[in-house]
Length: 302
Length: 269
Image 1: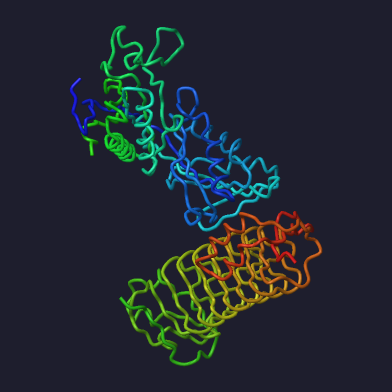
Image 2: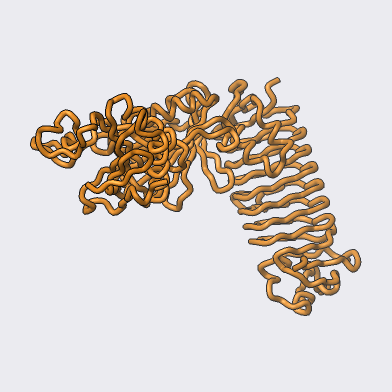
């Protein structure tokens, strides 16, 4: 594969292939930033990949009290799914089981859009007739009595059909430690980009997959071409100096947001340098035929 | 472009109906055409030109000299702004759908009656039944924001269905009577039996109360997110009241004489 070299790090002349997704956003608040974070973390647990989780979710950013509807500390959460119906189902299940249950929490729309998903409009039934609707201006809220007071939940939240899932960068290094270090700085840089999440643990996936499997029923399997322990055993994409590969997967509310995130991650990994970080950077694609969004690494270089 | 201004020539000899003087109706009309609009409520014909001297300007921003005999100012207005320099008679801003109506003086009864949207601000006092329905109507105010900087009369927010009424001063007897839903906030004192026969909705009695309706059930003192949310919404209309809203309130559920799904928030003590 053709490569460029920036700051001593080899960059594959390739692209990340990403897909259109449905997405929504929520603002979760609580009496303290820690409890807002707790509700958001719980709600976005087991939301790494649509392959088996139903949706991909994560925390976009923390919100100061001045940025939230009720003047309390908050967190903005993004949720992505492949269909509107699945997104609606995941939203109501996750808010119902993880946010409604979290002490002192409240939940508001985090995305302003004409198309709406039901939020409080489904959760309200938990109130068993004691729930109360309040409309302030154009917004409608449900107040559901719960054991620590009331759960406030906006009636609906916005839905976007223009979201993008599967933006990625692949970091390759000489050891697990150095590759992880490079991935961590890239993740930290991407956290500063608005409207994106990295759904995998700590933003990082170590088990990148390929489509299909030799086994019936498995729709994805290990990406053997990028497994360093298989370098000698057939088709590999790895060079002799690579011993560890990590992938950062990015979902964003817009194609631009995903591009900005990849640019920020790439810049941070390159800036970190090859001695303590990655030796090579690549991206995952399926030949360009499956996903409509192509992010070429050379166009995203700092 | 400057405002379309109606300056009072002399005090009217009869009550006048100013409901034709709304921005969407006057837009595009000439001074002569506006001057010919009839305003009388008796057999004696009175046109705009008889009562006001006109200074032409943008009909989207109107200034009208007030008088307590000017009824139905801004009735059913949908957009733009009307500033009344002085008092208004009955039914100011009745059925208004949008825009902003400001009354610098006092307003008579039924101000904001059945309003659906927009903002009505009364800088002085308001009469009885603000926002309320006229006889025979099923519901009162059903949207928008009504602010009274002074005091309001009896039955403020009668049959309120949606929207918010903020009274910075005192309210008379039976504030929020027969409320269907919506929000009524009183900064000062209220008369007897607030929330009388209310079904749903919220009444905040920030200045306390004397005689509470006996058919309200005390649910204790709570520091609710709902009042913080309400405060955020009230903030642009009344900063001082918004600050007072951000505190624990005693929650009373009622009126149990009807379905009892409404609430009164009052000071904890």
